[in-house]
Amino acid sequence: MNILIFEWRDIKNPAAGGSEIYFHELAKRWVKKGNRVTIICGGWKGCIKEENIDGIDIIRTGNALTLYLLAPLTYRKLKEKPDVIVDVENGIPFFSPLFSKCKRVLHIHHVHKEVWAKQASFPIALIGRFLETKLMPLFYKKSKIITISKSSAETIEKENIGNKEQILGIVNPGIEFYKIKKMQKSKNPSILFLNRIKRYKGVHILLQAINEINKKKDSKLKNLEVNIAGTGDDLEEMKDFAEKNELKNVKFLGRVSEEKKQELMQKAWIFVNPSFVEGWGIVNIEANYFGTLVIGSNVNGIKDSVINGKTGLLFDYGNYNDLADKITDLVKNKKVLDKMSKYSKKYSKKFDWNKKSEEYLKLLKSF
Image (tube, rainbow, N blue to C red):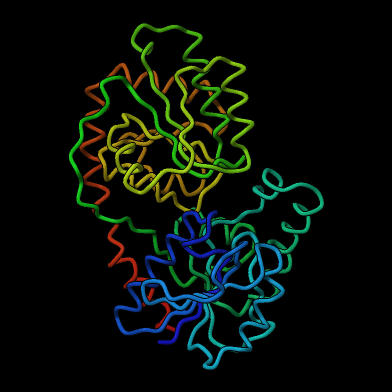
């Protein structure tokens, strides 16, 4: 097949996240199976406009905002039209039905409806929400939809973005099965957050929980270490909060390498994902692979990728006292923590990128 993916960013974009990892891992495997894959996405200052990465032809046009206006023009310049288009909605879609009659799939990681208010300012938030919840359903009512979790599929139906007949399937993300350099868990109890530091990702909730834990001066948590890895719009504000509240056990590590990420995940006792919403939460399964359980907010996506009581625990979103209590309970109960760690490793083996790429490709060929 000749597959075209319209995507906000690609894997090399400095702001790339879970969605970009997802499609790159799928696409490079599709290429190995003899398919042709092209990605049309936004660029950034100084980027190469066209390059081939892992067999994928990547065309960058405009930036994060102008991309949506320029994508149709870039599409028209393609020498060969695709067999199928994967139109990746990242808050707003590319509205490909307006400029292409090709077979298409609308891919929705998760519905951004409430995220717009948390992440964008007025009037951008209002416009984004209108485009996603009102215009998108109108233009894509004849398109098939693929998503990555059961809760995302349920929300798509609930918000009337698509109906049950439109949803072609659910394909969870996979993870890379690294050759693990065996490392011991850190001597002192340790917490890890590794994600983009944006408002909806909930770093502030974790820091508030750590502040509560520190206030109690529990002897069993006096050596608690907290590592915050990642960059984003909220980084400086989070650093200020930590400084004002004298959270001396919190370290901000910035963007870390893949090798460092693996080390952090393996040494951590607990991985925390306090996000407001996720499509799935690849980082949760990655942490599990390294034998680290996850405490995540009980929201769409995270509640799909975390098995409460087995691969981690779920807490009420925004309730930092609940998060603090769960961290405290686990640190104090090493037996339960170790049991969850073992189950997490076993569970993570289900998420093989090779199998996931085959699942998605099968769906693209099915209609």
